Image 1 (cartoon, rainbow, N blue to C red):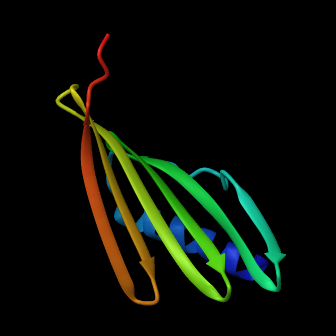
Image 2 (cartoon, one colour):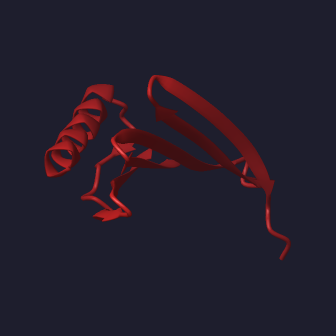
Length: 107
């Protein structure tokens, strides 16, 4: 798991550096990292956050029973009225995307 964790971190950094987006700000250290097992099922995960222009992006890699699940969440504000949330989940060559907007909170 440690090798996979380091490989994931390097891959995130490589993609981040290759994007070359002028509005993109640094990838931080893992926000969380955990490993364990429960009833002989190994699991673990880690997460990174960075800013891509006006969007806060969180990328997570989870290991569960020999499978990798990657989750990317993008949070941003549109027209200062709505919170936009886009979620992408990938595992085993399949990717599912979902996005929605939340109205501004009443004062």
